[in-house]
Length: 268
Image (cartoon, rainbow, N blue to C red):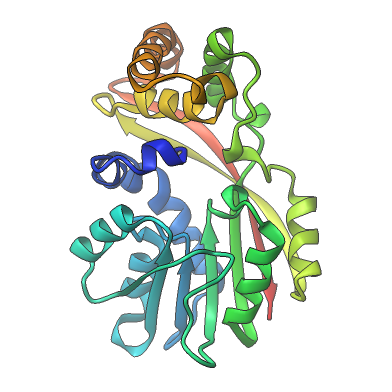
């Protein structure tokens, strides 16, 4: 789950993201991704790192023997990353023009749930290829379509009653075939993908419905046209109407639902 730019720029969102989403939502996939591609002593680059969970998992695995760098466009997200893991090198930069040092390359390049948001995906894929050493390993994860994720599909339908059709960027690379083509066109070899499914669990006090409604409102044409107060009021209305859906996915005291992602791997 990610949020649109208007929410990402709010000072408090980076802390909310780290507090509420990283542990239950992003860490499990980060661990699976790292297991696919990481070796001992690797130079590791995490693109669109957010608050840095994938880079942190990589650091846990390779320790001081390797070198870990995280790059993100959001200074607020990087501020949290630096506070949580000061030993990792964090850089601010755009995925379409990575802030690399002269001749700098990495043994492993990863991008978890970021590529679908990039305005120029071919340019970003080309930059990933530029950053990857010869015979280095790439891993890119993108959520499957929410048509395969009933919980998110039902929440989107609630929002669409207020906003009209929503093109949810989070699932813009839900089909693995365009993802594979994008990587092959960028010059990667041995491109493969698989679908991973996992049950995700959130504590009942997680403001999940609010965070998701913010994402949906922010990605809709109607939502972008609203002023801040109208947008906040609409988010609250959507949250209220979404409560019965969340209740139907509550397992004891936990919100529990299945989530699916593509994981594409390739060689540089």
